[in-house]
Amino acid sequence: MTQEFIDVLVIGAGPSGCVSASYLHNNGVKVKVVEKTKFPRLVVGESLIPRVMDHFDEAGLFPALDKMNFEKKLGARFIRGNEICVFDFSDKFSEGWDWTWQVPRADFDNTLAKEVINKGIDLEFESEVIAVQFEGKNSITTVKDKDGNLKEIHAKFIIDSSGYGRVLPRLLDLDTPSKLDPHSSIFTHVQDKNRPEGEEGTLISFDILETEVWLWVIPFSNGNTSLGVVGPTSFINSLSEGSNSESLRKAIQLSDYYIKRFGDVEFLFEPVKLENYSRSVKKMYGDGFALTGNSSEFLDPVFSSGVAFATESGMLSAKLIHKELNGTEVNWETEFAEYMKSGIGVFTTYVKEWYTGNLQTLFFHQPENPDVKRKICAVLAGYVWDQENPFVKKHDNVIKNMAHMINMEKEQAQKEE
Image 1 (cartoon, rainbow, N blue to C red):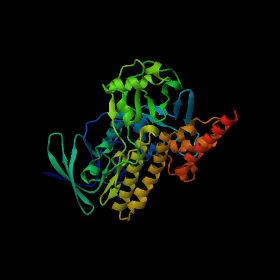
Image 2 (image 1 turned 135 degrees about the vertical axis):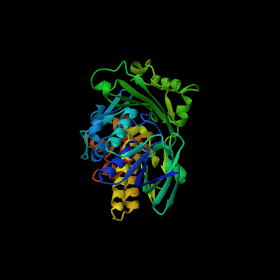
Image 3 (image 1 turned 180 degrees about the vertical axis):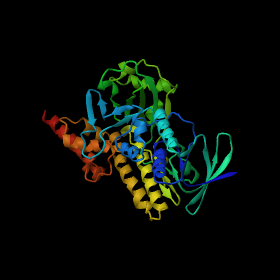
Image 4 (image 1 turned 45 degrees about the vertical axis):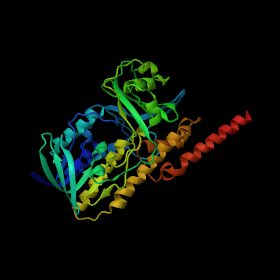
């Protein structure tokens, strides 16, 4: 069996893996990336949020992505019947990027991976991690290539960016149930032949069909659009006893706003179902390894936070490993786990309060409160570590309390009528 000796092994060549590998390589660390699949490959998570742009920029990956002319995402729109709420990322409480992209992830991830290879990083496709053992912080990882050949990779540190592959959580028994209720989704891409001109045709939208059920519409610059339905697993399973196509068609029929645009479009591939997608882990790091992105936590697609947490944790783990390799002591609990959990905690509250309907109450309340909207917008843009923002700092109670006040006012007004 052949052997390789490196500083850091990165498992997975998605956004998290590419960001961490690029940062380490740029800072003189010998890094190798192994990826189980062959790119380009289909993956969900096509709507980004502005916080990710900081990471692509810092990792030196932004110019290659920018050349691709992906659809610019300047904000997000939420629809509930005749009510519409639009968030504009340029009008938010926290400092930060005012825009990001909507991307077919097959093309996006492939661009990232190619740029990583262009930088001179060793990236090996169709190579699967089948075993790992640790001797202190040093690890020996057994990898099987596409021809079935085995090799050992000796590394001082492993970053697991394997996403839904969840390599180390499986091998080290780190999985634990998510705190969120079980939800599922079905999605596909369509050729958007009825796409309107102007902003209406390019704007990402979330169409609320019921309090806990919503349709996503993510237009791409290539003329295609991603369409998906999300809801409690019981609801998604009740849509149809037949195919995923039938289920998604039924969901589109429930949308007064989008039925004309998408009612008769062809699906470009058989819709994919992701069942009970929320994930969590017992711990996010250990001696000689860190878990990043979906390999540790995945919440919900409603606020497009997945890739942002992936790149945030990928960049942070790379920086901490670089410090450690240079002889600086790192407190992984406070500098990595607690930091990441604080941001994940904010988004978890927002996801939960979305499904209770409390956040929707704030979104659609008229007249709009511009100050509240700017503070919520900063959260939706991914700036969930800004403790100056009361909608971050007091996330546990602020949404619930404000929704309660609005509902009380409505009840009072109805009584007076």
